Image 1 (cartoon, rainbow, N blue to C red):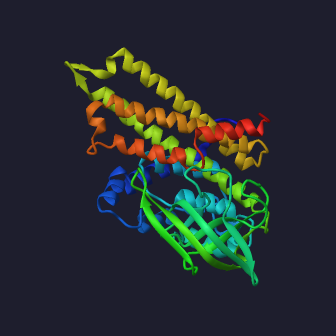
Image 2 (tube, rainbow, N blue to C red):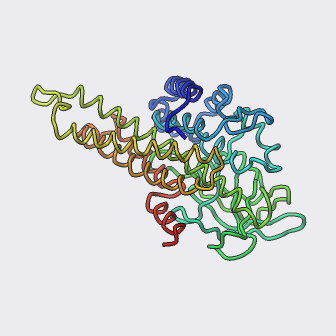
Image 3 (cartoon, helix red, strand yellow):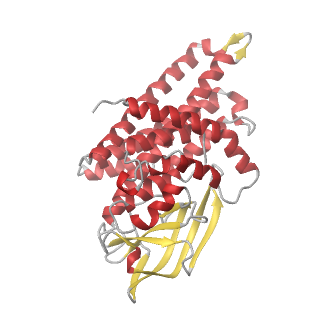
Length: 375
């Protein structure tokens, strides 16, 4: 597989680049933060994403979507990251769609996603860090289930129309089997969502399920076999988060390089200083290696390759490290200005930090790769 975009993917990238930069630049995110916006994103912009066809990238043509793949979704996500655009695209059009694909729930929820009217949130994590454990209980009740437990760091959880919930129907917390995935509507009785601001000013909710009852139709896939749709969700989410981080790291790098070309010290452009040139060259190299890792993971996912899961972990870890380097170098090379809220480079550092933790940080994926290899 060639590690570059084909002509159609390049055209999509150019379209997404122009659209996102015009409709949701960094100033859009700053405006939402400064107004203490309670939603966390623009619903009008989400409908514009649908009008552009972006929300249907991963949905098959037979269901009204574009029938494209993770490479194309990543193209859009990179531009979202480059502009720090608050959007439910990753959680809804990528991760949720991947989980719902091929299940009975797809027919119910895909039309709203395609129309830009439905927002999905992922109620997966229960602890301070992303871990592959599910403690929340789902007990049989009548013809359905009763959900009891708590989830946290649920991005858009307080305004989502659909919650995709991982709960345990058998076994212990660390068991891969015995997990069931549920599609829970926002108006379910006994569900409480408490939003909180994260470091990047985005909103994520702590969600309490106090005997939330759902019928059997809410099950995504098969009872006790939720590891399959959950695996699809996580692989798609991790790859998507890596693609968005590429945009964050790339946007920070571009901003920094431009600053080096414009800022003068003692009458000399600081970009002419050899030490800063070395740091910029090192950063560029690290970002390009991460880009190759992400594209490889996307291609393997689209091909249904059995090695896709390992490639996804490599991509998520490498992009987290490269983007962290990019935003840190950006703040440092901007000097005192980089520490102020008036300048945008700090926003890239904050968004990069949140994305690095989302779906597992570099240490989590390094450990996952080692465990998978038998170490």
